[in-house]
Structure formats: structure tokens, C-alpha cells
Length: 252
Image (cartoon, rainbow, N blue to C red):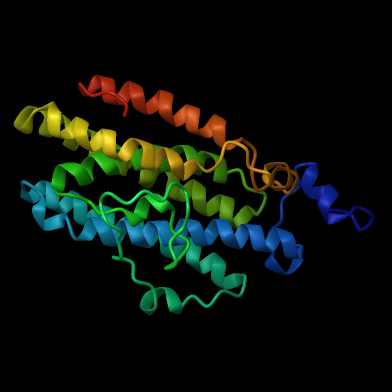
């Protein structure tokens, strides 16, 4: 960026930033919100899945679940370190958030956040046994894949690099879930799994946010977003519907 160009114009033309000292206040706020949402969702998701590990039907399944918990926590830490460079108090994440807190199974909060933290709304709902957890992991894992493809293009370069490293790890989690569902269809039948798909589908769908986000144009101009929520959701729906069909299930 040359000295004659405003930073807003630089970002609007596809420029990237590499140092938190150089970012405008509005940009800082939006990037911090994005990072907090990711970190809080990963930690809440890991905490919820940790409670399910010992319900795995076999040792291999429990090892896979434990690895997912470890890797989601590590992914959160990777982004949390960047938040620390922006001045966030990273210590509070270890001790001051009720990551296991959940609402009732029948609660319906749409896309709204809890009072606890910045986790996506879907992570406020409880898992109901092993099969339900595996279904949720597949649907949300596919959604995370779509979202990370978007976030890997963010104009804050260190964060984009972090998301690119995280993306294949999260993709593997979704693959493990699909493999788990394939085995569960054989052992338990499709009906209970379809019930979980019907439960989680609208809740995961809501994690993409409103189709008419008033901030999208502003975020796009800053290089924080590129693709509208509706387009990301449609991509997730189409790709995930194919995977479910291959498993003998259908979208919720």
C-alpha cells in the first residue's frame, strides 16, 4: 500500500493487511468478532463432543472422537493466538466460559447468540447420544468446510493462513462422521439417524446467518467477506444433500 492511498481503498481493491497495528477500528472490530465466533464455537463444540466420547460403540470410535476434541481445541488455540495479537485477553477463555452449557433440546433460538459467549447458536443445543453426535458432526462439519473456504480468503493475511491450515483438519472430521454414519446405518437402521438429521439440519442452516445481512457490502469492501450468506448456505445444502443421499438419508 502506498502512502497516497487510503487503507479503505486499498482493502476494497483486494489489498491485504499483516499487522494489527495497521488496521482501522471498524476492521479490527469485525475481524475480532469473526475470530471470537470461530474460537468460541470450536471450544463449545469440543466440550459438547467430549461428553460423548465414552458412548462410542468401540475403541476406534472413541479414539477418533477424542482426536476430534483435541484438534478442535487446537484449532481454537491457533486463532486465539491471533486474537491475542489484537489485544484480546486470551486467558479468560481457559477459565471463565461455561463451554459445556446447553439449552433444552426443544429450545428454538434461531441464529441468536447465548449470553455465555460468541458461539454460533447451533452449539447451544445438546447432543443426544452417540448417533446424534455423529450426525451433528457431519452436518456442521460440512458447514464449517464451506465457511472456512470463505474465511481463508480474508484480507487479514495471518488469519487467512490460519484458516487454510485448519480447513483440512475440519474436513477430515466431517469425513470421519460420514464413515461413522455409514456403519450406524447398518447397525441401527436409518430411522434414528434421519430423526437426528431432521433435528440438526435447520439449526446448522441457521449458522450461516441472515440472507439479507445489511453489513455484507461493508464487510466485502473490507475484504472480510466475499460470498453472501445465502450463497454459502445453498452450497452447503447441495453438497451435504448428496452425501446424505449416498448414506441412505435425506436433508431435513
